[in-house]
Every structure is written in C-alpha cells, then in structure tokens.
Image (cartoon, rainbow, N blue to C red; front, side, top):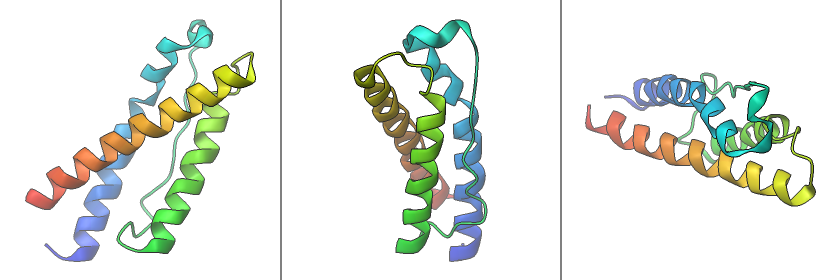
Length: 101
C-alpha cells in the first residue's frame, strides 16, 4: 500500500471516528443539547510533521467548540482533554488497522 493510499485511508477512518465524537458529550452536563463538530483530515498527510501539526490544531479547535457549553474552566479543560484523548486513541487504532490492510 503506498503512503498516499495509506494516508487517504487513515483520513477516511479518522473522519468516521470523529462521527462518534458526540458520544463524548454524554459525560458532560451539556448532553441535553446534542451538538457535534468535525475535523477535516482528508487533505492532510499525517505521515509528515506538518500534517500532524495541522491535525492537532484542527483537533484543538474542534475540542474547544465541542466543549464551549461547559460552565467552568475546569470542566472545559477536562472536556477538551477527553475529546483529544478519545479522537487520538481512535485515530491510532484506525491507523494500526489501516496499516495491516
């Protein structure tokens, strides 16, 4: 599998993983008002430092938006950390899966 195909597959899988992001809202006080956000990754080459940096910046922006309804700074920080951890874990699992295929 070429690097471009692998990157495209990772981007597709990451997009699907981000579709599950609203589930993270269930652990917050704001879950009564469903909301979601997305991170576009299809145009990024995650095999490069620049691509990973852009991904992290987009993830941080999405996490801030997703957690903006939290009422305290501590709750916002915990929510953002949780979103980042969940998305990064799903991405890592999908990268490992994609590299096998």
